[in-house]
Length: 405
Image (cartoon, rainbow, N blue to C red; front, top):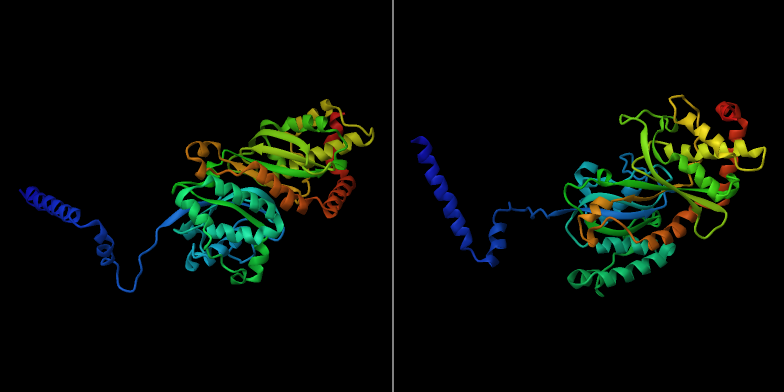
């Protein structure tokens, strides 16, 4: 039969090749494999999909994401460093698809992050040199954090990997190998770690929820922390935030807010830190959430000099979450920053060396040293003052505030 005449030799050939390969000494396999590589062509090195755990101040950047226009971004600055370290080929460094570039949370122009995750495909190599380069460049800003992190990593990682990280003879590239612009921008980025992730890993989809923080001067609120917490608790749960964004969303405008915590910002008694945890957020949503509370508190508490009654606040919130269209002001953008994307479900599946999380103590130090110092300035206080004056000049646009009285 025709089928039988072809199957026999095929099986015989496969068995023959298998037997011949099994008889080759193991130490000769690399030499034999080299014969199949065309002349003048080196073997293509294996790539790894990794997550870069970072913190940054967004002030000098045009956002997080790589942009083809060449404007400075956080991702572009990191890519420049990776190219310098030969961890990304220069020919691939201008194409996000070739690098498989992804991020957990997008941050816009000027927005900071105490922790974010950027995923990219890198050539196989030692990533510790890349981390140490950013440590070294950031040392003037957050040297305390770098020292603590190095001590912790030295104690946690043993064997060959520890030897690679802490070898006395490791060559660290000189700073003059980077352009002055890249050097200046790198001072605004801190790399916590670089960890391997599965090939199918998508940081945006794997994020369980996100935590954003907003800093606001206490004098802008004129209420005690307990009252303020009660007001912000009205956001908790799943609600329709169609009045808290400027654009339509294919997924609709319903969003889940898991929790909101109001506390004094570390190291100061003049600022509140408002910590908002949610699955996802729409454009301007958080700024409008903060602006809405500022609007209500200042409008209904201004005449009496006290906090507005919670019943009044509840009625106004009910209007905002109804189908009715309301004009809700955005609070200033500068005091908003990403605290962390949370990967609880992912981290439960992998050992601690691959976990996408950072030490909370170190993150708090970074927030204080890098982010608070950018936000808690007289310029930011003046920004809130101008915002309040603008609201008072256009208070007629918020007539719905009268309906709850």
